[in-house]
Length: 396
Image (cartoon, rainbow, N blue to C red):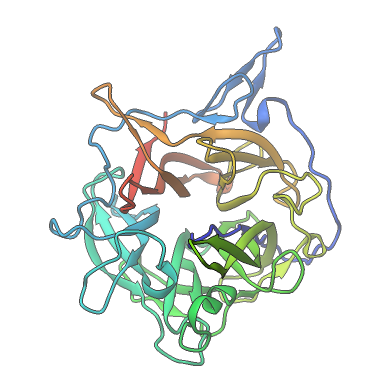
């Protein structure tokens, strides 16, 4: 999510560091259904389609339900949201808010890297009517820290000990000025025993970028606790690119980022540095062995069959959602295909089509054995006027 789009990286969590390069295994019905005697697939919820690739959504009762109007009618720009259900039955959403010092806001995502903070809202309804609570992970304000000016794209997770962690992107545009700030992104973490806080951040990042397909930076973490108590992270990497803009008399070179792929890493607990798997190779995207479309913004969960991932895929027209799965606990991933597009159905029979629909995050309800049921998909969306906000759509 920058002026050009950023690539996703994946990090996986485990006790032992595994450095084997794995080949993804294909599974019947995309690991999301049962093959019938006639060759068709009987899909597990929330999937549908001939090979159980696409997500099956319920129509939205209230258009733009989610974070469209949580600031007492003051139209504020947000981007995506990571939902979680608290023990008291309420729902918490942690999201990016493009906040200025005077509480005004950018209406679009172009300058996210200058103004984003990680904020918090709650609701009795998982799909909407959220009420703003507070900023939970503000920029540190230090010129020397990795997150001195910007905290962005949070993902919240309940840890094996039933405490909580928020993983996020940190930037410091005081230390790295202008668009050069985009080339210095790291992944940080904050921890709390209660979703209402207080949140205590680790001073150092849990993952920083290295040269190669990551381009020296990492972003957009997705973290999944494993049955053995470790944490699996998926992350994305980038490369710095100069883009040409042709004016009437000028050619302007502007530095941006080009998404390159997704990787995986592991850590024994929330406050440890993550270690890359597969010798640091990408597991999805054009730099991976499978040479899939460009991908970012992943979210993961475990079913009784294996692991699934929903991602934002780029350069695929309106088909912006992707589905991938893993049969080996996240070491390797198979790209299944398109999971959804830019259009959302409303209960009155109308449709809402957005210019952008990215940053998918799932509401995951955990059961025994770390098996999870997913009930809602939240996304950062952009209207045709560029205004960005967050929607939540229930799954079948």
